[in-house]
Image (cartoon, rainbow, N blue to C red; front, side):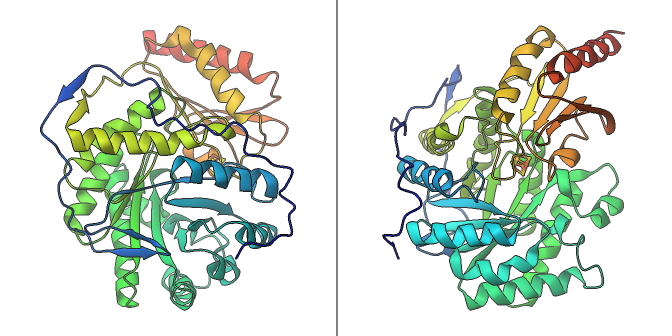
Length: 409
Ligand code: SF4
């Protein structure tokens, strides 16, 4: 599998962190008896990795680099492998990304999963290269409107079967299938569960059982509620747990821990992804944090559920779709600037791209999503305009002042 041809050689592995401690461990701890019950799910095979059933809970992460940046992405794969990732996800949006993945595949034996957005047809070329395909039911209605969603899924499944790939049905509160949103207005959790259940039925009818489901949101309480409801409905289906856009450590770790503690202690969750906004070279932290949470739940060490009222900054963990590498710096600067508002119940969302940024900032009081040369500012669903990376912070601050004032009355 490994080739000697190497556009990668200039990228070293300097700076990989090896320690397995949890950064900023939250206090205080509550001690309980060991709490990692048996799970009832069936086993799923993802290349060499078995998930679900009686297998240990696996841990995964995603490359934050541009997929076409071969050196950077291979370095990111190595960083995640060194941190102990069982599975590594790569975002694919174009034919050029597929070509990049072909190159990367020559350089690594890591179990890989691709994350698809609207371009589901890329599966044809991707399936031979990876062990798992993630599709989002909320993204299958955009292209080829004359085709039914079931037909598109059948097409994906055919390729998955041919190349022995597993599938993840990845439902996100921020990008729900509009049919389910209309059916359950104001109840994202029910819409999310119904959408996941519908796709499980499609795969079941096709006779395909090598699949998992994820139900994600940036609010840990929604993640808990959605996964509990789904697990009641489909106790056989393995679950991939994650809190999207959890944000910067330590808050991002705390939000994730809240959700994972509640679910893992009830036997819900077969594989985990921790999503943190951290510099590319620190991505291994996502793996270390996930393993630490599993170990703590296993040992009965729980964090008391903190009060999440007050300032809430959500930010995506970034991925190859990030439009400007200043994104992580921007998220950090927003957090620092907004500290003066920490007593107020204000949510600020900072997202890295136009793919998920516009939708996933809708529920925040103030939202930023990055474009290559400017940042889009939103107040709820309303766009307030575009600002340069230099101008966005003062502009955000004046809007934050207005929001604080309205919350003070
Ligand atoms: S918001 Fe965009 S850049 Fe951030 S993780 Fe999601 S897809 Fe990637």
